[in-house]
Length: 193
Ligand SMILES: Cc1cc2nc3c(=O)[nH]c(=O)nc-3n(C[C@H](O)[C@H](O)[C@H](O)COP(=O)(O)O)c2cc1C
Image (cartoon, rainbow, N blue to C red; front, side, top):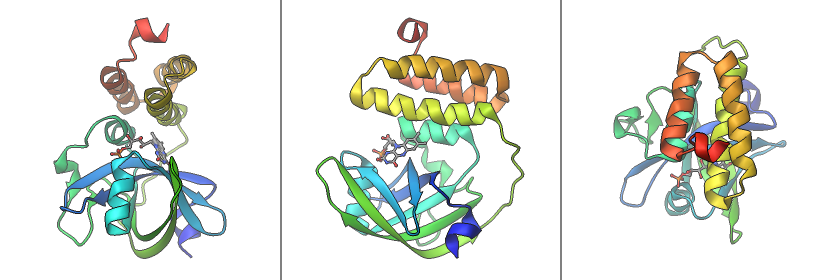
């Protein structure tokens, strides 16, 4: 069963790779919801939604590099991070990936995408001790995307809180990710208080 094999439970954060109708790849973090079945809630103003709508396919890349979450959420991920050799685009850094057939239940702002696994691959079983700095980068990146969408200043305060955890608990990759987040997002000291 794919849920146990890939560790999907509750909401699992992956990086979704998709292609547009014209074949251009895209990458963005998405939460995979496990509630007996697998699904995702995807905002209809995203490229990911447009690509799923066009192709009915999405690849969930399981990655443990915090920088990839920041870059794919807030910028266009450089093409050399994506392997286009196979039938579907996958991230070169993926520990594992699952190709999903998607069926969309449309809603104006946020669609529910029902996911049916088609193909899967485990490439690397990496040992990752729980690291609060890593988790804080993921939280900060979600707050950054919400701030950009809603402009609620509470997200800036929450990013600042995450940054303190990254400074205390993160490794060099987490610290670099937080620097990038602030660089792209513009969450400098003035904004974050
Ligand atoms: C960890 C994480 C999880 C996210 N989960 C979702 C999600 O489930 N659905 C969604 O629409 N956006 C989600 N986002 C926000 C999108 O990744 C973000 O809006 C991104 O810019 C969309 O890029 P795109 O337009 O290239 O698809 C998430 C962001 C992060 C950092």
